[in-house]
Image (cartoon, rainbow, N blue to C red; front, side):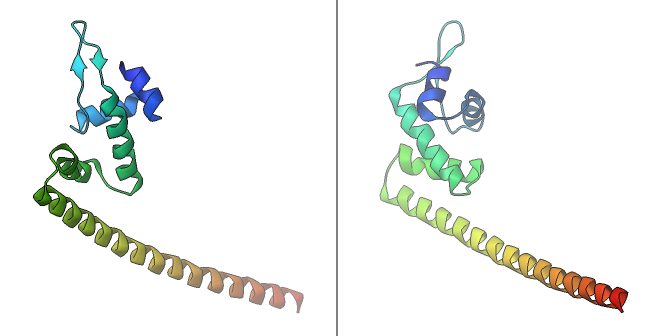
Length: 125
């Protein structure tokens, strides 16, 4: 199938598919005229790549995880699980930072409301 059909079947843009190839996440064969051609397998692969992106993984991390899919083995599986664990820890730390940032914003909002109420009370007096 050609790139447009793969994009339709996988629910992604042609631009995304070109990016995936550029990053080494996806491969195609080329016709004599240079058009990309894919098999049905690539539909599943693109869907899997999309799931990995949706989980917050970068293309670099996805590249590290794909050997588990391309060459399944206990060693590759262990490496993939270890890498996903590292990413989970990174996301957890980021969530904790976001919670602290949100709490700081809540404090500023509380102060701003108190200041506004105090200003309104002074204006009324």
